[in-house]
Amino acid sequence: DAAFHRDLYGYAVVGESVHVPGQLVVGAMGAIKPGGKLRSFESRRKREDATLRAVWKAIEPYQPRAVADQANADAVKDYFQRMGAPTKIVSLTGPIQTAAFTSLRSRLDDGSLRLWKHTPLIEELRRVSVRGADRIYLRRQGDSHADIASAVALAAYELRHATGTPEGKPVGGPSLSRRIEEARHGRANGWPGGGGKSIINEMF
Image (cartoon, rainbow, N blue to C red; front, side):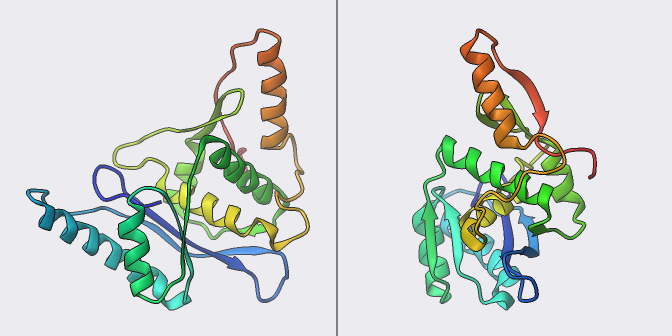
């Protein structure tokens, strides 16, 4: 979840378990705060490179391939490919963002995505909600704009075909996709939409 100015640069390493085929596991994750003043094009590029170096230091041991959204796409793709990491840019439209968080919620429900206890991520997930019929809302808190959560969601979405059920199996209550479907039906009948309930439940 690339960012070089106001927001934090969220990153997450996600891959398929070597022990349980089809199960996704999470390694390093975090958020980097860009530093340095933007007085010129040169200083802007130095800030970008310093931020990318910090992200690369965290993910390099995993020998990753990189997936990023369209923000600062040229700088991100150029840097990681120079580091030897194949890099894919995803145009994160509203529907794709919704699909990514739908998949994330379903995989958390059915256990096909295993997270380690990471307090900043849990706090961010609690601020991710659905507004209206189908819009994902990322509530900002300080410098954080759910940057780590967005990185985890995008990575899990990129690996959605690791099992035969791309979104995971919705269990333990209404899935996010079902809630969106119900919200769409309600809106079609004159209901304006919900107030932004968190996508995760109280098990966190």
